[in-house]
Image (cartoon, rainbow, N blue to C red; front, side, top):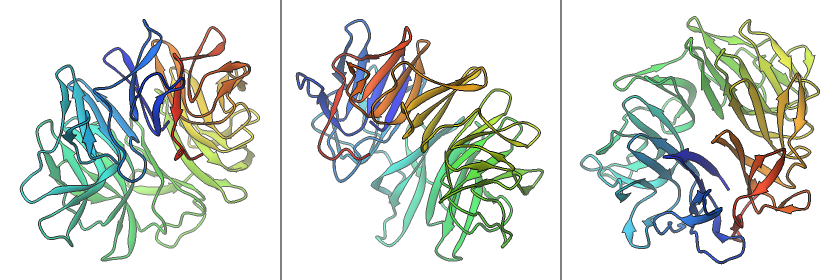
Length: 384
């Protein structure tokens, strides 16, 4: 399970699964859950797998659900080339590209702005040696976003602009850059590595997270995370440290507090086990006793922060200044979280919660994890 999204009053799941857990229904990597029937159904016949992860991006907008991954057929027959849209009228192949541009690999990440869906992937121009790694779907056509960058990693939006971590083969430089729909603007100096995650606060502060020590223009000490504020990159205290430290999950609440998850033992000057908080004053603080394994995903639900990953119980909520493992927990990695209809949904690679069989996707309701129908069964390629 790699992606969960609620759209049009239903819950959608995408990933490395081929059927429900009883093998009674073929689901082909993309499924929709019907709570009235308590069962999963394939969405429009599903899609195929070309090389690697069949679905790793789901985004819902008013006009439809967007699906990105490593597939080239949808609905059993329609050519799709890594991206597709679905609405009440069925599949939209989303193949329309500006002249001379073709899609050659699926998007690894997507972000929404007011003017379209931005996707990181591979778009090839008329000449085989020319590639565009970023494109925008405006509802009718894919347009390649031209730049001097050859790699992108991490993508976030404030609604009007899109922010990405970039690398250029020409200059050999890493940057965080902003694209406003017309022009590129690099935010400050040169990074020594590409950020793995980005987030944007309502006041325009941009947060960039990565593994290990981040250097900007040769200055050290950023340690996994940096913030762009008042036209300069600033350190968050002494950053995040520990054995092979990593920050790979960011979430921001309505008060612009930043939550950071990953693998670390200290945040600034305080002990913080794999998860921490940056409050509005810029100070890093711990969140209770932390979590005893790598945090892979964070979700803010009103005033509650929810974490999933490779720690005990694999999913927990921070309530009343302490982490509470939800119900009996889950017995394997959680890599996707969603809130729908006031319930928490978790997807990943797990089989049970206590004695309850849930099969890779579950809903937390009434104090316990419950199965969604028969659950979803992965094929042999599912990776932890």
